[in-house]
Every structure is written in C-alpha cells, then in structure tokens.
Image (cartoon, rainbow, N blue to C red):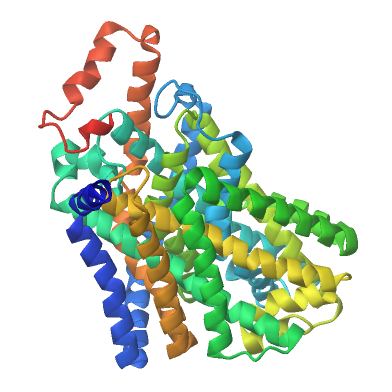
Length: 538
C-alpha cells in the first residue's frame, strides 16, 4: 500500500502540470464551444484556415521540400554512419521498427484517403496537370502522382528525420528531456529549452497532434457505421458510431498501457501483415496489371516532377484544400512523431533512419494508395460514376466500401478492410497517447494512468464531436492547419540543427577523422548554462 502511494506521489510530482492542464484544457474548451455553437466554431476554424493557408502555405511547402533535401543529403554523406543514442545495439528488430514507424502515420488517415484522394484527382485533375481531360486514361498518372505528393517523401521526411536527429542529440548527449521543447536546443541552448518557450513548444505539439489524431478517430466511427449499414443493415446512427469508438478506444488504450515492446509493437506488426494480405488479395483477384503499370508510371512521373509539384503555387484555392492542408497535417504530427521515432530508434544510424522513414515508408505508402485508389480508378474508368457518385454523395466512407464491393471475393475483402480500419487507427491512437504521455510526464515509459487519460480523452472528444454532427470532426481536423503555424516555427531550426548536431555526433564517434582543433570547435560552441533538469537521462 505504501509502495503504491509512493508511486502515485512520484507520478503527481513528475507531471508537467502547466503543459498538461493547458493542452488538455484546449480540448475541453473546443468541445464546450462546439456544443454551444458549432456554426461559430466552424466559422472561426474556416477563418484561421484561410489565414494560415494564405500566409504560411508557401512556408509549409518550402519547409517540407528543404527537409527532404537536407535529410537525404545527411544520409548519403559521411554523417549517415552516426549511431543515434550511442554505439549500442537497437532495442527493436528492423521489421518491427519499420512497422511501428509506418503504421503511426499511414494509419492516421491513409486508410481513408488512399481510396478517396486518387478518385478526387481523377475526376478533377489537379491544376499542375492542366490540359489533361478528367476521367480519361491520361488522368490516371496525374491523379496518383498528386496523391504521392501529399503522402510520400515530403510527408515522411518532415515527420521523423531531422527532428529525430536533433531530439536524439538533445536527449542522449545533452541530457535534455525527451520532449518537443528539446527541439529548441539549436536556437535557445539548454537553459532556454527549460524555460517558458519550452512549455509553449510542448503545448502546441500536443494540441496539433491531438487535433490530427482525433479527426481520424471520429472518421473511423463514421466510416465503419456506413460500412455496417450497407453490408449488414446495422442502422447508421450515433449509437452505432459510439459503440465502434468504444471498441477502438478499448483496443488502443490496452495497447498503450502494455507499452512499446508488447501492445504497440504487436499491433504494428499485425497491421503490416494484414495490409500485405489485403494487397495480395487485391492483386490476385483485382486489376493487378493496371495497378502495377499505374504505380510504375505514376512513381516515375512523381519523381520527375517532384520539385515543381512540391513548390507549385499556381492555384491558391486548390492548394489550400489539398497540398497545404496535408503538409500542415504532417507538420502538426512532426514533433510528436519525431519524438516517438527517437524513442524507438536508439542504436540506429542516421542512414538507417532516413532509409526507413524517408524511403521505405513513402514508397510502401505510394503502393498502398495505388492498390486501393488505383483499383477505384480502374472501376471508374470502365464504368464512370461507379465510385465517384457514392464518394460525392456520402463522402470518404463511401469510396473504400464501393471499391471493395467491386472486387471479386468482396465477402472476404470487406471484413478484412473493417478489421484493418480498427487496427490501423488503434496503432495511431496508442502511439500518440504513449507519446503525449512522455511529454507531460518526462518519462521514457510514462505512467499507465497518464497513458489511459490521453487514450480515453481523444476517444471521448471524437464521440462528442460526432454527436454534434460531422461538422464538429471536420472543424477539429481543419484546425490543424492553424496549429501547424507555430509548429512550423518549431521545425524550421531543424534545417540547420540537424546537420550541425549530426556533425557533432560524428566527431564524438569518429574522433580519429578530425584534427584536434576541429574537435575543440564544438566545445567552444556549446552553450555555457547550468545543467538542465533532464541531465539525469544522459
């Protein structure tokens, strides 16, 4: 009994209450405001959305592009051999490590958008590809290439390449907390990280990732309810949606509580294996030739046009609702995803990090989009309206279901997709609940009650917003574009902080490659401040 009391007292003492109360309080205030007047909340969100897209859209695009260039440059340079966290053996096997990385983002929205986004672009060709007739065979590659732009190299690089390098140096070398605030080290030094600006960084990171995660959790309830109604006749009502969310929250709460090495790793491995099975089934019974040809052609088109597509600024309206929206979403995930990857990547080299996060994950994501979205395009090309009409009438939930129903063996594929919907979102829910708990507790393995709180509060907010109406979920989802503004300011220093700190770690691990005076340069450049409260983690 006394031991339990001591643990409780230690937990209460370790919690960063200002960050915890402010970030959690934001969610409470948002829900209360939505309950009072969802129209006012939506109007506010739309105003901040337009302002953010107008004044920061170009910054978001440039930041993503520069991150790709610098991260890839680090990987192929001599600094790519730097081991993050020291010369130790990785704690997690390579397959499990890649699975955990991929599922955290892809599960957060890829399951919904992989079917719908290519159809949107196929029926309304992006302005970058002006002159191509919508709905024609020539529109296939542009549709997939635009989807690759939003979910490929840019998205993954901004999530966990340079950010992870900076966090690993700050945590393992300088002894700073494993929190978003430590990303400020290249700018503020140790003392500044532990000051009020550090608290602001933690708060905006939590709010951004909460908005980005609660949205997909809510959309899962809507998607599953829609699918159950059309396949089993279950009424598509709030009670059904609530029951789905309860199951989802129960799964990812249990996974988050059991930790990285059990629940989260198991769920990630399960998802990747199940996704392989689904892709294999679609290729076996679906339009395999069309999928493979479309993937190769669209990938080549995407690589060829990567720079002009990423930096395209020709149609502000289209960019706001597509490229800027998605880039802002991934920017919002950046600090917390970088923290999560830093937590599981000790012993990995920078080259391994960039290869896993910046190459393997995006290419796998692109093929996933081609398998589901490409199948939808195939059916739409041969029977116009078969997928697009349900999509435009019922929204995102309809695209995935109607693509699955057009495939042979749909009686197997549809239930498999339903399982994947739940397990994919559970992976995002558990990893983000775990990571938010790290931020407010300052512990590598945060206390179970804190993990449970974040896991349940995200599900509860999603349920309340669904009860208000689908507009509540969309409002919170769109709000992430505004939250990406302060987060982007937090990520900009990664552009020079990543290379500088990679160089320092290289000197530490390979001193024989440098002259004595070169080794002394970094000692002079180090901030001369008092030891930080996180120094016990060194």
